[in-house]
Image 1 (tube, rainbow, N blue to C red):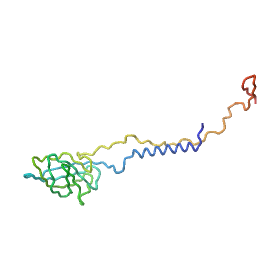
Image 2: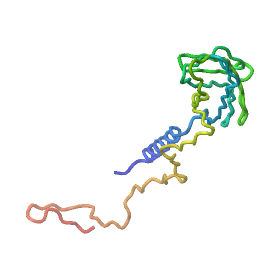
Image 3: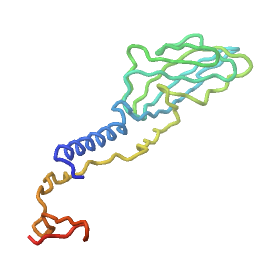
Length: 191
């Protein structure tokens, strides 16, 4: 059964639309910027059951316009006072957020803040930090390629020439038949 020109165009259009939607589905969002950082946490002073610490964040990824640094204490330390960041604590989990004047960190730039805290027993330095939800390990995470490669639409569209409507002239079938009940069912009549 031959397809009409309209059917061929419809099938071609549907195929192109399917390919375009597949390419959009595997495209990475524009705001998926690479993140990476390193953190220096230094105890600047320690007394009795108190301490002071300075934290420096170096942005190794794309520029950020605001930041949140998180870490957890393992020995019951508590932040009591901070400067150059808004620091909150819930149990062992500590969250430091930028203040109005130090939210932007350009690539390879640093920002610092400090705080005082209390401790009892021991005051180990935290070893795991996250900047804006991404682990700070001194490098940038590798970019992950899409799981399925995007497919490219054909560069040359299929021909849209309709098939011929008349049979080729080389066909020599008879145009009429003679019927007989005693002989063969059909005999060609020369014509």
